[in-house]
Length: 329
Image 1 (cartoon, one colour):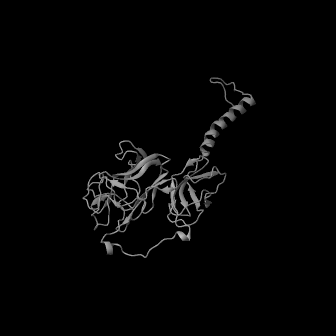
Image 2 (cartoon, helix red, strand yellow):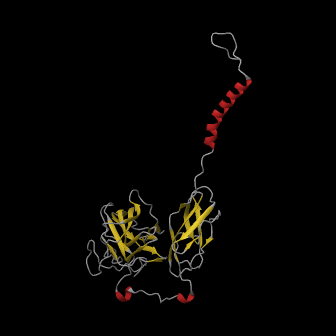
Image 3 (tube, rainbow, N blue to C red):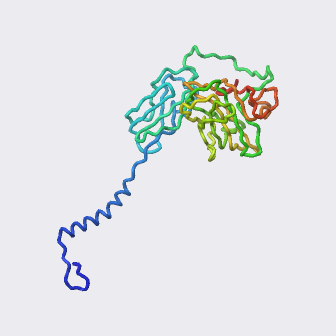
């Protein structure tokens, strides 16, 4: 139908070029929003679920060049970079490979604790840190004794780790810390959960923070991990690692601000606390202190950071039997 002027019988005749331009503009006006909605920018991938020899934060790796793998949160990887603390930096490698990347850094030692991370492109965002611990690499390094029961001779039972004194409220604050002997740059801090009473992750804090400091009272500290705003999922027996990014300090403290419930009370417990620096666990055998402890709980199986012959004292500075990074002293 040909339009006309209002109040007139004279038809309005438009040139063909004008009508074509008008129709084209209308088509683009309709089509462009639909096109933009159908082509969102892709989400950049991030490496997650880091694994060494196909296991998460494994112990006892007995191959000299372990294979490293990871999954992607989204999209497709075009390049990667693997950094193993102080031992290897792959640089940016143009590849979509994310499975069985062979370690190609400095020679690894038996019992060495290693922290590593990876980033992928597009995006180049770093992953959360992960760790692995080497086993015995050479047959001549094996040293063993007959398995026995030392408590049958000494009357003492082997400590299981650290267990704070039980609390009646979940918001009662507890802390445990390790003295590394000197201030030094740290690569990673790893909390190793405990198994007790048929429960994996027994006593692992529901909310907590990890700090380092040169002051044993932590009046000034560097925050490594803050998990105090929301409940942290219980990891079971999976070690929980946090990247220290080279932060320097002598003391490492884990503060539980919300405790896990066990029976009718609340508790805080860890099997091990490992601190990685220069490719090794520098917390092994280091002195440990804590706010309190439950050395008499459970028939004497636990050793708090207190002198064994002394009663539990708050904020004690005595050396415990529990050694970080070792299941038994």
